[in-house]
Length: 250
Image 1: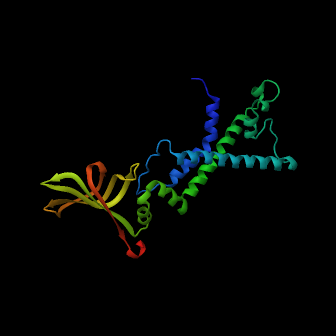
Image 2: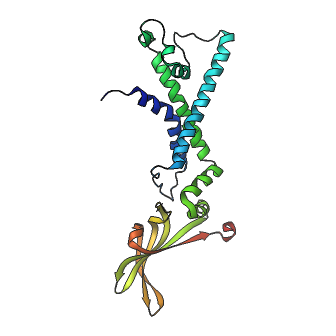
Image 3: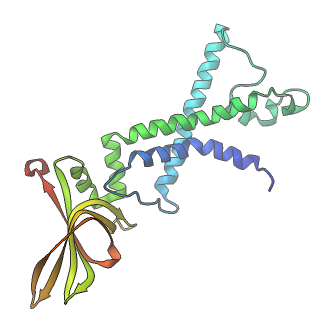
């Protein structure tokens, strides 16, 4: 397979955008909610990558221009035998080649320097995106687009005096009654429609639900489970309840 210089250059130029996307994804980590995979052809992810790449290279180009502006009159900077501005090299193309045998005459340190110049914006934008993603406002906006209806519950459950109780009725039966579970929500995974796809319960109690003559009866069973994972496809109903300090819930 032949080396594609154009593809390699495109990936380097898009690196700051991918770093912004990765920084935001890392910043939104939540122990209570499992991260859903990005939707294919997501417009939001595409815009994040494009604008992140533009912002990263804009910052780097500004720094290189400021360096050149400062070094030219000051005459205190170390001179090199190649153009340190990688963006000017990319735009100029073959016109940036020195006389002689072209790029073969370039010093050996020019390539590492140019690669570092293209990777540095990715490092800066990734760190900045991760830092911005931890801000409450940015995190709330991001979670609203991902979690939807579940975001207010997650916001309240983050405090130490709140927790979510789940009551899950499964499709399994025992003596004509449905097997159900009650426990503290340890983790939730949402599907593309923002519905619960999987739920993990901690300190879980198992009980039976019997429906007879329009009456719903709960039959407690002396069974306690430390941790259990349930998939929504095996459940008939999932009810949630937020418990904690009533004054803080308003």
